[in-house]
Every structure is written in structure tokens, then in C-alpha cells.
Length: 357
Ligand code: SF4
Ligand code: SF4
Figure (cartoon, rainbow, N blue to C red):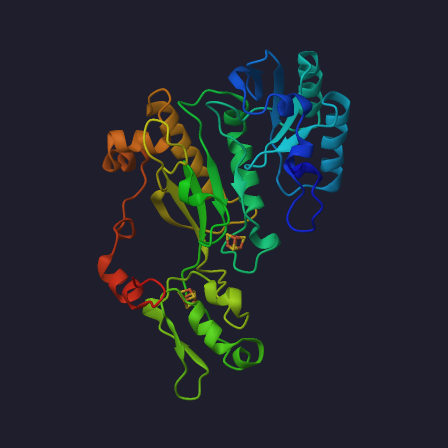
């Protein structure tokens, strides 16, 4: 049999097996049960009786080299060099020595990295690139997440919510974050069509590719001397055209902002996975601390914490009490934007070559 861990290739990441903790490698697929030893501390026990302990801390996701070196030094000191980053950017230190847990936790907390995020707590917030890196961002990512987590940190370090609560942020609806399936999703939204730089378009873009890039067919060959036209009523402000053509910017400091979505989940425990649904259609960008976004998210978390039954996820709670009651309890205004507009969809999706079946 081919030993995949020894394969030599320059395609893709190296085989993960070589990075597994020896206890995990030895007991792969033979785990009997796991238990919680406290917020951020898990113990997995295998059929053979071997145990592996995880210590989970929050990371700011965009990490300085000093932070990575700090994590690596701690892993060398307490975990024989083994750690992993979860998909929500928590850092998990893995050790088979229970005595190492307390000093490791201590060092992390002294350095300002909260330990928690397991079981009925908020896990680290997954987020996208924001103004730091991405061209199509309608809002920042790490900045808002920092502000929200500052306000909710004790919900990370204590397991006092009805169930696990996953929050995510994507800075545009391309949604590199998991906003479509998180308990609370913070989603950057554009609200204006792209501004076409007619002079630049033919110099920096391929016009047929640009026209084909629009999922709603809103970009047409131009008339009256223009290179392309955008049918504004058909534009859904997705930013796809800007991705293929930098002469179609749609960033707008006045009209870009944030929407809040709730009730999504990936898990199929108790009921099928759910998509997030709209709760707040628009909150303006207010850097550097985004007070209205923080207030809105904290409000939803607190109302959920007070009213949901044990082990009820956000979406399950809302469906049990009904959406009208959710809006009533949270005090969120119900607007026309909460209603699916089939008439409008008729003027957009139905005309798209890409979305017609
Ligand atoms: S969500 Fe949008 S703006 Fe944010 S990183 Fe992804 S493509 Fe860029
Ligand atoms: S690609 Fe998106 S933003 Fe660009 S015109 Fe089409 S719908 Fe509007």
C-alpha cells in the first residue's frame, strides 16, 4: 500500500497525517467518548483507554508573527509541539499529559488569550478579510469581530448559553465566511450598483468576460458611445463584476454597511441544517467600534440566552416561538426588506442565462 504521508508533491498541502499527535494517529477512528473538563478544556478517550486533552483559546485570526511564535513555544513546552487551528480560528493545544493543562491555561490567560469556546459557549468568530485585504468589502471584518467579541468575551469563557452559538462575519455577500449557516451572521452589504469607468473598462477588462460575470444579466454592451451599461434595477450589488474588472468599483462609504442574519446552522442534530435568515437589513458602518452592530448582536444573544430551552440552537428557538415573536422579543423592526420579493426576483433571476434551468 502507498504510504501517503511520504508522497512527494508540490500540489496542495502536505498530507495531514504527519502532523497528527501520536495519540491521535494511534487511535484514529477509534474514539469512544469525550468529556468536558471545563470551558475550553476537552478530554477524548479512545477504545484503547488512551486519552488526549485539548486546551482551546481564542485567536484574533489575523495573527502577528509574535503571536504565532508564542503559540508555537507553548506547544513545544506543554504539548510536544502539537497544536491545531480550528475552522473558526480557535487555537487548540493537544497534550496527553493532564498535568500540563493548568499551567498551559495559565500562561495563555496571562498573555491575554481567553480559554473557552467549547460546548454551550460562543466559539471564536469566523471572519473574512475586510478592508485589510479584499477589494469588494462592504465593511471591515477583524475590526467588527474584535468589538463584538470584546462585548461577548464572557460568553466565550463560560458555558452558560442554552446551546452552542456560532457567529460569523463576511464583508460582502460573496461570503467567504460561513454567514449562510451561522446562528448569528454579520454580513457586509453594498446598496448601489457599480460606477462604470467607461474610459478604463476597455483598457483593463475583457468586455465579454465582464458581461458574462454578472449573475443577473444586468451588464449589457453599451449604447450611445458607452462600453457597457448596467441596468440598475437588475443589479443586486453582488460585486462579481468588480472582481473581474477593477474599472467597475461599487464601494460606497455612505451606502455600504451591515446586515444581521440569524438562525443558520450546519449541524443536523435534532433537525436538518438551516440557512440564516434576515433579522436586520442595514446598519451603517461606524468604525472604529461599530456600536450599533455590537448592540444589535449582544441584544440577540441576550434575548436568546434568556428565552431558549436547554440545547436549543438559535434557529430552533426562533422556529419554536415563531418569527413574529422573535421580532417582538428582540425589539427588531420588521420591514419590507424581510419579505421575499418575487416580483423583483422576476426582473432579475429570470433574465439570467446563468440561473435559468
Ligand atoms: S466576503 Fe467578499 S469582501 Fe470579504 S473577503 Fe470574501 S470576497 Fe472579499
Ligand atoms: S455583477 Fe453584481 S454588482 Fe455587478 S452589475 Fe451584476 S449584479 Fe450588479
